[in-house]
Length: 327
Ligand SMILES: NC(=O)c1ccc[n+]([C@@H]2O[C@H](COP(=O)([O-])OP(=O)(O)OC[C@H]3O[C@@H](n4cnc5c(N)ncnc54)[C@H](O)[C@@H]3O)[C@@H](O)[C@H]2O)c1
Image (cartoon, rainbow, N blue to C red; front, side, top):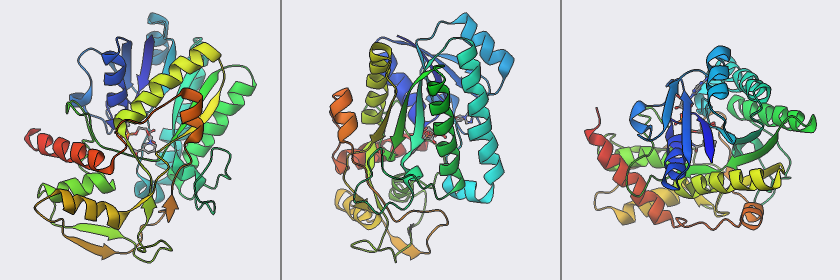
């Protein structure tokens, strides 16, 4: 397959590019490097430094290559930042994506895999969110994803494209061969920050919120290893090309861990204890987000391989140790 990846210099995009290349597929990447890094771009991928809204350049890339599908990862991803700068998120994530998707359609690239987020479910009263659960995005970041989903669905109804929308729960871990992982130094990602404390880049870990209605009063999340998530993308492309049928899938393991449980599991793994303190809730944060992932397992015959919390923590920590040597 010949695949275009937007945001391929980022955490999940670069990993998916590697997984595709490992399986013998051709990969081209479009990324403006706003948060991504050249260090993460696989050597065997073709790289175009380009914004997804650059009509001329994107059109040229699409006309030069005949892509089978596009995986659209590019976007800004920080909930807290989106609360502070909602317009920046609206423009980069929604307006630009809309224009990009229309450039793809114009150039007959009609198969799209889109990175959405579980946070569009918002405060779900249901135990585990299903794809048809009520959507209730609570922060500007999630709202942009909700709007792009609707835009994609609208274009599909006009018979202009086929899509797979993937709603990721919390993505974590790193490539087992340590070729890629989360590089963003300003990340507020729970496991990333815990790794920074474990490797002494930070002094202590702050648990944001200790008055949630959960068993230990800290927020609960469903973590999925980035390698398992990449595999879902590859299966999604094959499904889309074969069946031409649009779908929405939750991407998680269907199991919730509290922030405190994560820190405690980390401390069991490590000799040096992660020191933690409790802080206030962050604006936009959700109490509990856990997937029902039966649909993706059944439809794509996806079998998670890295779904042990310790595997996620170990690979993330090994990556963090490796990047100490990065400049
Ligand atoms: N990391 C998670 O836990 C998580 C959870 C749910 C959804 N997602 C979604 O998955 C996707 C990838 O996330 P990630 O964690 O790899 O983030 P990331 O920040 O590591 O990667 C995003 C990439 O997109 C690029 N980019 C941003 N705007 C662009 C633009 N206008 N033009 C070209 N390139 C642009 C950035 O430079 C970066 O390389 C995002 O769309 C994000 O919303 C991530």
